[in-house]
Amino acid sequence: MSFFTKAVDPDKWKEKYLNLLDEQEQSEATFKKSEESYKEKEDLLCKTIVRLTIATTGLDPLLDPHLLGIRDQLKNGINSHALKDELEKFTTSVAQIKHTPHQDRSVETGLLFDFLLQQYNTETHQSSLKRLKEKAETVKFETPNQLFIAILEAIEPNDLSAPNVIANHIDIGIVSRQMLLLLEGIEIPSIFDQQAQIAKQLLSASNQSTTDFEIILDKSFKLLLKIKQHNQTEQQDIDKFLSHITEQLAALDVSVMGASTAAIESAENRSRLDQSVSEQMEQLQLSSSTATKLEPLKGIINNRLATIAKEIQEHSQKEAIQREKTQQQLDDLVDKIKNMESESCDLKSKLKIANTQALRDTLTGLPNRNAYNERLETELARWKRYHSPLSLIIWDIDHFKNINDSYGHKAGDKVLLLIAKQLSDHSRATDFISRFGGEEFTMLLPNTDSQSALVLANQLRQTIEKTGFNASGVSVAITISCGITEFILSDTDEIAFERADQALYQAKEQGRNRCCIL
Image 1: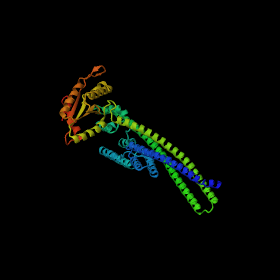
Image 2: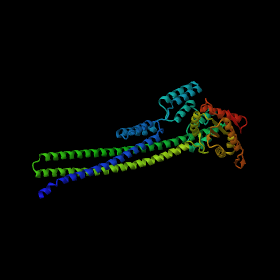
Image 3: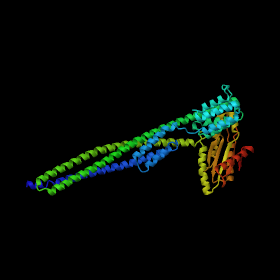
Image 4: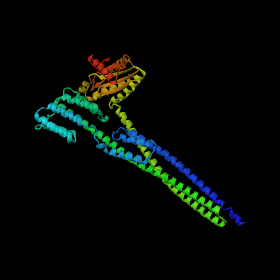
């Protein structure tokens, strides 16, 4: 009886093996879920990196091709080697930003020397300036200031210390106009807006003495230096941020490569286990088919089963260790992605604030010239598509310079605030009002022809005329004039603006405090 009892015992290995197979399938299912989770997190990482590259595009032309290359690499998932190459190129470019000149000044230097050679036609001046021009084209001066000093030495070698060397040889009006064009052409940070407005008003004054002009010029140059230093500081902050992002991307690349390697190793281990179990089963089948006695067969089966059980146990232990390692890598990856998402949100908020500041006049709170240009594109596209009327009004405060001269710039600022408020409060919701610059305001009136715009403009003009204003306890009359035009089929934005500006000039010529149409 004991013999027959032992004869049924070999069936237990089947149950044991099946149980082990169930555990293996459960392990594979768990790992599959981990792989799916890893895939989702990889997709999230790709999206985060792509959004960051989009957000930083345009900060520097040197970086844009690499940002585009990173986005292209991420379209089909993370290719570690290719992405690593792009990141290394990107890092190199970031390091070169502050060493890359933004603008080639050689053409401007050539024009400067051409002008000087026409103005100073003596043999001594001609010889000195030509030598200096050759030096500027070959050796290059480190700063414009060094070049200017060298030019002064060539022009006035014996009288460089005289206080009015520059003023005696230049036209103050020309320099003032060029400085105005420079201030109008550069992007001025909002914190310097008020100083820039004062500098523009001083440069616009026609009754400047040599001493006054030197003071104004000095203030203007100091303002330009402050703007340059401010922009350099912002550029350094951007460089630091981009370097930080590059480091984080490199760290994420390492984490992804680690998780990917772990997944490959796990798959190879499963493949080896399956192959080993298959080989053991084949050996069992071969042993069973060739065995002539029961006891040796039982020994062979027991040994094979023990080997299989040991291999499965070792594999399970390795899988558990590998899963724990992979999970830790994934957790680290999630933490890094969360940090990058947080920084991305902060950057997005800062960009939104910067964009708002770039499109708003800091004094009045109205949209500024940049915002006007953006809105004009939208309204022109709508006008061309639907053929509905579109009118433009240019407003200008009457005798604004007299208010500044008589009561000070603070009083002038209060007048600007007052006009901005009245225009905003008494215009329609569909009208777009902006402070175009100085004492000029613009209005875009969609679905409004020129006659309807004239009715609205006169109502606003009369409202402002009735508005009281006190400066230093003195009642000051405030009036405003405007030019109106309606866009016609052949118009560009420049043509229409020039026509409205001519209408404004007519209103001024006819006595101010009136509205004219062209």
